[in-house]
Image (tube, rainbow, N blue to C red; front, top):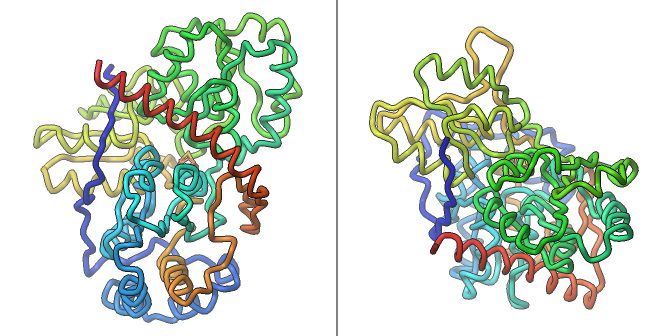
Length: 440
Ligand code: SF4
């Protein structure tokens, strides 16, 4: 079993290339999935003869090149590794960068010269950039309906009532550790309780640090990451309590179990990562492959894998392996497809952990993240250039988004500032602890 903290300080080009014979987008979204202001762009896209680069790129260029010329160095395009491969390549084609959630969150701080960030990924990632941005930096998301399902089962109006009950019972003896996949409102809760944000690459270091405070740890929202980290840092499984996710989170508190618990987990999970099983690991290992997985996978899977780690870890670990090595990788499907493409150039073979031949099992991509497609990128950049970008695409700290309609509830300015300050404290603690752990 390998485990390591990866603190990749750079954003590099993915190295992925657009190929003339491969369609630009996996599937077309139905027209009524686009917000009203984006529909005319989607209609033009749908009317193109096919989805191949020769048809799509000239159309995209006609809108995006003028926007890039207008904003010049003020503009930064960003996407997450889990975006469909071709969208990742498109973002890079127009000078944008690809990163994991930790690095995405730091882009406004690392690039104070950039004034406009346009992100193709899910909402919590865009909000994390907004939380750390300066007053003269604006953050936009290409599709406000792109939410993370794990975060959607841990909205503030679900978690805060449960936390209030914990606080009523234990007073200030509860510290909150909020995974990056949370809203700004929960990151602020972590900040207020003296806790910190964590990512999959630094969760063990953060939980070790939180244990040092001698308080109960309330870990939100991913139960699987929570169980995996507990094992890494040596928390007794008997001293872990699990609260159901969603609206029921605060309803079933067993006082005896909670009194005994050192770690209290919120019960969210990622549908993409919970499909993995120990049997899949055994199947691929028997076929001669090394198996590496993301720690949002269930603990029994992580326990039998050859290695586990963050998105950045998986990317680096596989691509730095010796030529001739073969892997089964257990994480998001688009990422694995992009990784397989890059690995093949190095004579390394990669399959998705859930793609068991001759069975119904198949790996899947993050469906909500894939709601960002070429028309979304084109529309937002053209509307920005024309000064007509819709307010629902602008991301501010503390926004709560309805992922069905895209509607966002905004805080008043002073409330937003205070929430951002609390959340920033939790993010800054994460950076301090992570840097200290990687230096030691
Ligand atoms: S892959 Fe899972 S955890 Fe990651 S953004 Fe998508 S739904 Fe959320």
